[in-house]
Image 1 (cartoon, rainbow, N blue to C red):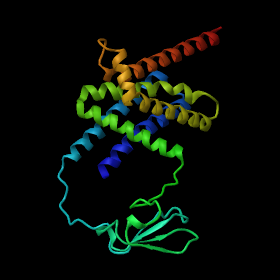
Image 2 (image 1 turned 90 degrees about the horizontal axis):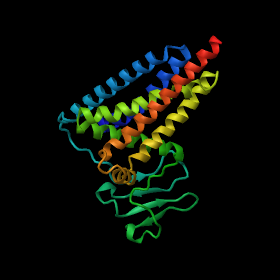
Image 3 (image 1 turned 120 degrees about the vertical axis):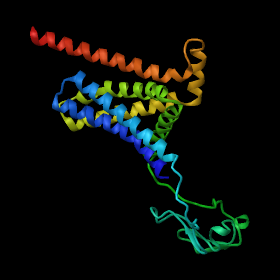
Image 4 (image 1 turned 90 degrees about the vertical axis):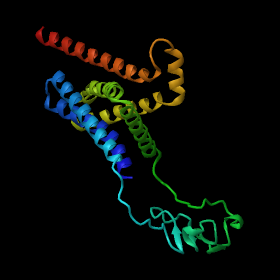
Length: 257
């Protein structure tokens, strides 16, 4: 569980560190090519180092310990974050989760049932609720899928990890223009968060099975389908970097005139 949580945090930390580093560099008005190069090298090095550490940690045998039961007789299943949630009391605990139970529905008396077969209401064996807003759920899901892609490419080898993560970091490093959109640093930070959220959603969309099949059919004989997403990331990042350079040159000419 700790390793899975660390993998999830790695993808989140990669996006957040890139955003904060670019925001700091823009606010301090550092030389853009140097800032982008440093951010790229540091982000890739740290992501590879942590991926390597987590991969090796997974091979360490876990300590043998006594397996604890989830709950004894009278186990109460409910969502403690929502007081209006239906609660179920398993009279025989997890030893017989489909056995006798007492159902507590808000504004109704307690109901006893011999088993789930004659409960009379549609309740799952473990009725946990979740009131998390959808935009947070989608963010968590996309971060999880992004982490799975990083882990997958790391297990395939250094070259695969370098191509995928390097292209993604290169694309993120090119989005510094979004953090210079206005003269208010806090507003720029929020704009950068929205842009990075969009890139995360696009990454999830491109890595779906349907899009991979589409890329494979379109690029048949040209390149492997696994290189389609890194190529798109690198190409778009390169265009944004060239656009930023052209804007910088045009502003310098205007200042000289």
